[in-house]
Length: 164
Image (cartoon, rainbow, N blue to C red; front, side, top):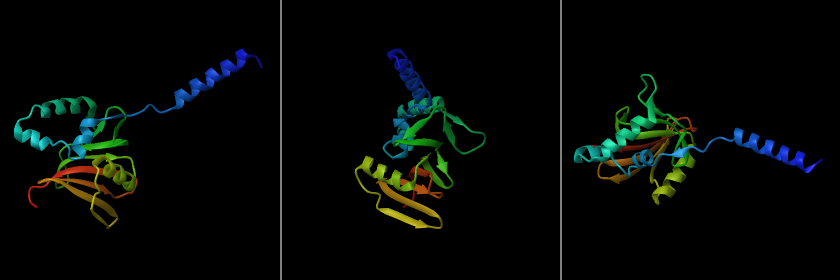
């Protein structure tokens, strides 16, 4: 085989590999900070902080509503805490007021990553009724919560509790 043929095959294999490789999803630091209770839209709103308008503008440009669902989805593949972001619940889930995201990863992997990111464990965990959850109080009325029901995807949430 000539050098030219080997080079042509190498280039073709390389192009095929690149074509089939998934593009790296970008992380969204603002969404991650909200989900991990590092930032709070509620605090920004109360303080009249301009960060709220900046975050809202970013949010409107990067996420889209999906019908009448209570969540939005990223317009481009996005990661939070290194996991593929599936859905964002910007204000509440059921009775919980806060900010939450659903990532495509098993509960145990998300818990380990979140604990490593925060530099501390999530001490209050429960399992029952097909649910698994952990929580960590972050501030007086802010609690980081992880939850899963199906074991395949995990909700990362920052809930704002008014009565404790």
